[in-house]
Amino acid sequence: MQRLENAGLIPEDRLPTYLTGFGAGLALVLLAEVAFGVAVGSPLVTDGTFLVGVITTIPFLVGISYAGYWLRSSALSPARYPRIGWWCLSGLGAFLFVNAALIAVDPIESWVAILSWLRWAVAFGAGTGLLIGCIEARAIERALTAERAVLRTEHVEQQRDYLDYLNGILRHEVLNAATIINGYASTVLETESGLCDRNRHRLEIVIDESEEMSTVIDDVRVLLRTTEGSYQPEAVNASRVLSDELDKLSNRRPSLEVAASIPDDVFVRADDLLARVFGNLLSNAVEHNDAATPRIEVTLDPGPETVRIEIADNGPGIPNSKLDVLFDRVESRGQTHGLGLYLVSQLVARYGGTVDLVETGPDGSRFAVELPTASSGRTADPIEESSTTALVVT
Image (tube, rainbow, N blue to C red):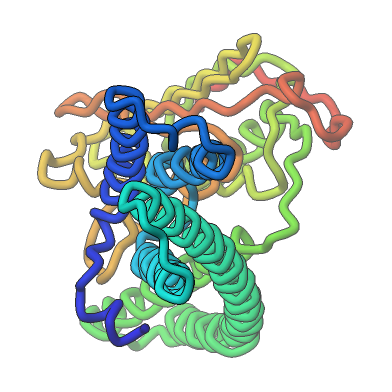
């Protein structure tokens, strides 16, 4: 049977149509029998055996015709259709053979009665085989679904173990090595007064690259945390988190001008990684800003369902060639607006929010983040204390 299925004798996509047409054809044959018997005044149409045959045929005709519609709307894969079709044909053939043998053993003089008997045998056999085929197909589909679920669970467990291992390597090996490289390079740069400008510049490159490595490793570690399956959003004080990140940025960049409008105690549904969203957007606004006096503007606008945070800078803007892939994962180094913005997009999506580049040009860029408020489907009490932030200019 499997070999015949694979031979394409019963096309997968045509079986529902064949079944509907077959059921309709048998119904027409039955109607033609009754109409012909009534027209010629045959006593067969009033015979009890004939009437029982007609009545018992009708459910199978309806079932065969309905099966075509059911297959189109069911969740069964079309890969199961050929087997269902062959069950239908097998039932038809087997039952027709048995009844033909009975007719041969006990001959019937009326050809009309013989044809009626054979028509009943075809409908009964095809309908029974079709029912068996559909039941078997559903059983196979359930078994395959369960097997795929088990394999998927095993794969997820393997991936989680692998990510835990990768996280351990990043935390204990690579990040420690980057810290040691940075420490030794900084010590040499600070203590060795006889360094020439060329070697001093090389050491500064080593320090910058090690710091960049640490940042990338830290972002990767955060991304690994987002793969944890036990995520539960909480009510996080976005006002305080954003203010803290602004303070950190101002401390690192004393010449930076910051204009911030942040109301107190605005809570959103997020987690403790929300700081990475704000930190990456703020750092991105500064790192790519070549203005004589870098400036950023930050606003937090609470709404009934979402909270909107906008971060604008006076940098050179983002090239058109980068706009379509701005939030995509970086496959190689040397690309600006890379892993940080990808991390931002992943975290914001995790929170059920959105992040967009609202505008960009020679006068600067503006990013907007919208996050669901904690009051819209809150799952936890506020976990942060209140804070106060107004306008800050340094």
